Image (tube, rainbow, N blue to C red; front, side, top):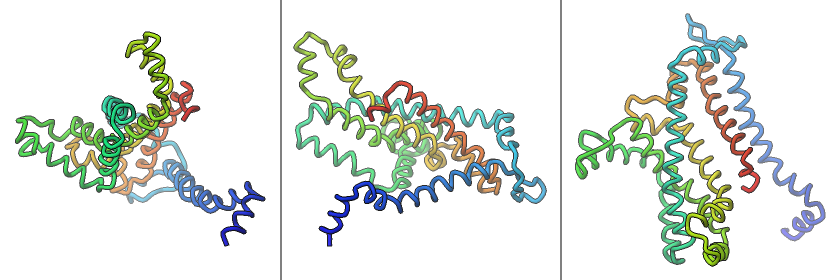
Length: 283
């Protein structure tokens, strides 16, 4: 049965590929692009102030409210700052870990580190977030008991927990990029008298840049849209996701949909800026 199917694919590779991917692509268009279109349309509706029902009257009133009320700008800037901080922390941690795994560790140690890196991804997101809550509790958390200090619940706790959660997504692309870096280039740079700093700047960084860009896309986008961790360890801190969830809870769907467009715009600007560097072409 498989041989006739293989012959058919061999004779009609393009048609076979289209037939094979047609259903998943159609599902992607309907579910993802359809829901995105519904979100954009909902953001143009309004909310009746008396009945609190959604009025399907198209307008830009929700975007004007987001622009005119400073609280939404503060929430957006706070979210952007947290996402940038998490990305920076993960890069600082991921680069030496990935370099050690790819270029220093023995095969056995490399496999052990790979298992240790991937295994936490199988654990529940909520379980890990609540475990960190017990660490960060300023009243009687593990950090308070052992070190006598804890950042407590707030922005610092959010950055710490998100950096922990997304660290594997930063290490894996950078590790893959370092795996593609031939050791002969490092040896050639050393033979020509290049010091460690020169080698990193002139040899390693240009090759590793696409992998670093991929890592930042993962950590930045995941942090930008997160709201569960903020609710668990953020205390009174509010980010875009929390405001969206709160507005959905009171049936203010149009304003929530309009605010949900803000992270999308931020990511589009971020990706366009990265694209101009040329790093995306080598991903």
